[in-house]
Length: 433
Ligand SMILES: Cc1cc2nc3c(=O)[nH]c(=O)nc-3n(C[C@H](O)[C@H](O)[C@H](O)COP(=O)(O)OP(=O)(O)OC[C@H]3O[C@@H](n4cnc5c(N)ncnc54)[C@H](O)[C@@H]3O)c2cc1C
Image (cartoon, rainbow, N blue to C red; front, side, top):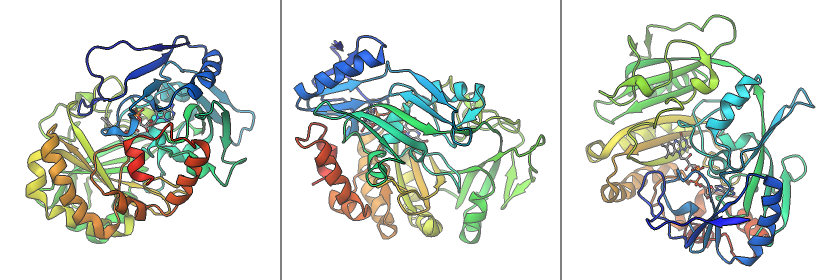
């Protein structure tokens, strides 16, 4: 049975900048996923407008609907499959967050290749928007998905896998909730690993002109932070994978930047207490995110935007944004620069191109941010910048159409699986015109 959440106050996303319009939110009454799955199959054909809600961490209307939101947060199942030792996998219920999954996987000797900056997001919601971490060879988190179970608007339970459905699977992983309610995902695993992170301060931007690739290849995962002032990255976070018992060499200087002498927060004058351990090796899930699992990341009240440009154009794109520095900095907590390896997922921001992602953590000043975004987007237009689906952007629909070569195929897939537009919302309608 699905229960209607009774709420007098408007329900909002995590950042509080978006109030859901959905008339109601339904949640399963029990954690018996099989029972509730059967109920869901009966329920969906009776509804006209539906959207799955994950952990509410997107900054825009992507998870909203004028009808009914459905949250499967109670679906917490996790099941390892090691029957093929060369290809271990885990199948998880739609409510599992990376915070639920990662320590559990590590305890059993496994890992997923990468993580985002915070653990509170649901795996399904994150993979629906091509959420990513950093790393020159690391693809977005969705690239680890090898199978999906979803219930369509007509109530059909579909099992899609990379091996059995190679023609449509790359369109069904980063699907922005447009194809149905995903009830479980299967992820490819690798053996657990150890990481050590070192922070360097003050990396001059001119080093990026000829050494951008070397800088981002210096570790398994590398992030640069900047407030766009003084033509420099205020910090470089280099996360190296341990391949033996000893940590890899840790030079005192790094492309003009100086190795830290104490644990640091990406924002100046913020306590580093809530950051993951630096300088001391530890398991992947306690080093790849910048923030500890038990703390609210960054400043809490914030907005975010992010744009993906071709990695080869990374330096020029950074220079283009830098021209706006005096407009950007007053409204900014911090910018993070990360790299994402190309993939074949039709709506991934890194589709078919190795990417540099230019991220902005903004102060919670919606009007100022929304008036700045078109300026940033104009600066990045020559680089065919793809905005992160889950963050704030103002890129017009006509531009988005040109940025995704497989968008027409996705539109076709969505209309096959959802012919009456049950899962369409304003966000998707603008995209799938
Ligand atoms: C503090 C903070 C830090 C962040 N850090 C990063 C980062 O490091 N890297 C990055 O790339 N992004 C980051 N993000 C963005 C975030 O990862 C994405 O917005 C992600 O999609 C949020 O997942 P969610 O579980 O909250 O899903 P929601 O925001 O609730 O939903 C997102 C989408 O998933 C769909 N969805 C959810 N559940 C289902 C389901 N069961 N079936 C079908 N569709 C479903 C929704 O319909 C919607 O389209 C961050 C966000 C915040 C607030």
